[in-house]
Image 1 (cartoon, rainbow, N blue to C red):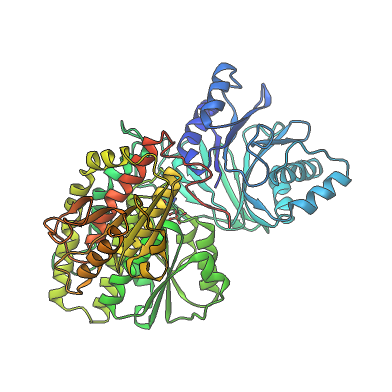
Image 2 (cartoon, rainbow, N blue to C red):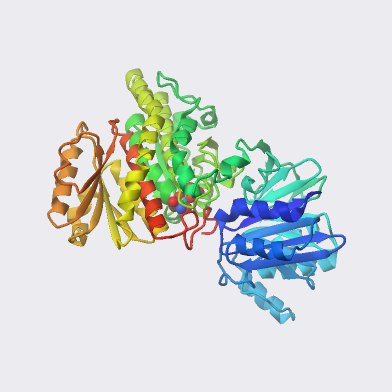
Length: 614
Ligand code: M6R
């Protein structure tokens, strides 16, 4: 969850570190800190509770050091409240050693007791400080930061990325990772470390991804990587395919507003080069799979990514004829499912770092399943550990609330479904061509939905005092209802629930009282499954009990008009494309309602973009 940056090189390290933290602040934003080591000044550091701006103002007013080697951190609290003392870096060895940590050290309590018994004093309530003190002990014994790190990581259980600097070793940063991300940025006469490439993409596009249980020793001119057991490693290099400006707000009021505006382009990028107009799917990355062997697909994902998977799964099962299920990653793993080489376990994750999903992927790998990652972030851990990866190419998503990633993930699953259907020869050329036509038309139709922004803003304006909102959908409208409700919860802190409309009469209808706001995702009246009339009946049932209905329905759907208080229209589209249009106003609604309540849109309370703890 926390953001980590490290730098060795000739630039002003404070500038590099603070710029890196600014790009990583979406990972955690309850406190921030830096430590810089130079020949002249030794180790200097500062850390402050609150958002990065508090630290930035502080170091602007009282500059720390201009050159040197540095590490910096932005925190998402696990152990101990967000205070100055609990912020990172943690110092040890009389203030000569500084450490930052992302993850959770599960055996910290016993280590802390042991260190207290040996006379050590703790200044924070964090689990991280034990690693700082252990490193100080090991450094005193060995005189070498890398060897000290090797000794300490063997004593730690849980998940960690650690970076350490020491006043006696100017020009060196040592990092280690287990179950938590760390990426290396390769420069000319300078090198970088980051929780993800956003930390250094303004300076270099060349990157190496550090593997599980590896230690990196970084200087200006060298990057040495070893395993925890000391074996030399050469991590794979990759090029970051987006520009630093892609992770800037670019004049938008929030990252979320920018990312919603990028929804059409994100979908176009996911499809680009992978789908001919005749409907042929070409995804060379899938050649690593033994497709002929697949007799079952299980999606694993969390939050919005799980809803994207649910949506895509409807299409995949229909087009491929393969049984498809979707599970929350954290539930999947602990029920010990029966999987084998015929099972394709598909993880869906924007960040590629979600710990629950990573652990589920590892479980699937160990159980002998084939694993496929649908991911947006290069250099992330889940792709590294999967049999194959399909990148969504949606561009960096910075706002904590996921928007363009949802659309690109669902579309990637559609492509995969069509690919499997073609491989198994269950999709006719005619059907494939028609799906391709629909998919290629999507970006323009999504743009039409993005343009509903001002109307949705008006709706949100008069709902700022609302205490509860319900969302109803059926079939592919159901994951859209879940996604709409999740956005409202996380952004506007309003109680919101998404229901399968058919479930209403089995309990939730008791919630309907006069004035209750209910969004209803209405399938097209042209839908051959006759769900349209069933959903219109649901609308009548809730209207009869005094609910205020906001319908998202196809343009010209006359059956809805008499019963809805508001209708947001979507352009005519095929049943599998409609949900990708209906979701856009719900993304906008969550954002605008948060805006109307004066809340922080990009950094909602208690959340972080990349959830790297279980
Ligand atoms: O990076 P991932 O796609 O694995 O993240 C999964 C969820 O944590 C994420 O989608 C979360 O639900 C979003 N904040 C929802 O907007």
